[in-house]
Image (cartoon, rainbow, N blue to C red; front, side, top):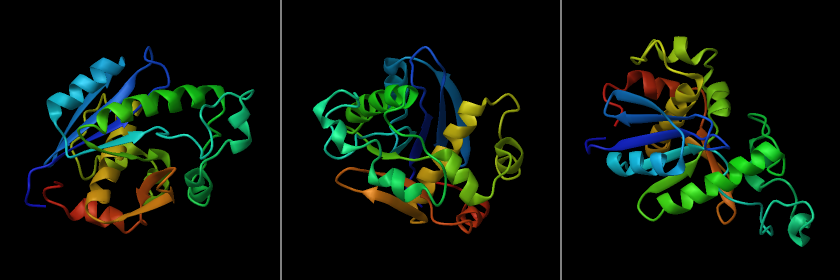
Length: 204
């Protein structure tokens, strides 16, 4: 907690032409951005040089699969990872073989593979984090504790929640769902984690 660290949260879009929300958590300050292309996202992270990157997107394939094509021999591997099965009591996720999810997964894997050469990267699921923490309205509820621009987009708010989940990960208030050899999802341990966020004068 004494060492200065930065966390980047990313609400990744499946297509580069669609907006991806970015939230940079530095001490108690949040910096929001909307970016599009992979290179713009990677350049922003390299400029930030964070201790952790928390991404809202699947970052691995189900065990036994080489792709997500339905006519490939690997399709017998299934549509879900163990992490998607484990998260069901907490929140709803879609099969990775759905068209939109397939694009998001492949993009997430590509970006994460590049980032992992330099940074610690975790996968998270902000909508599940929101449910666990009991946050009905992110702008309103998080705005009670943190300064949030009135014009912050839904994507940027999801990225903020990804960054906050990353903070909980660094402070041991998290659950890791799934098989580490296949790919895991990080979520808050329980609603009590919100108290850690509320009481932290300096989040990093």
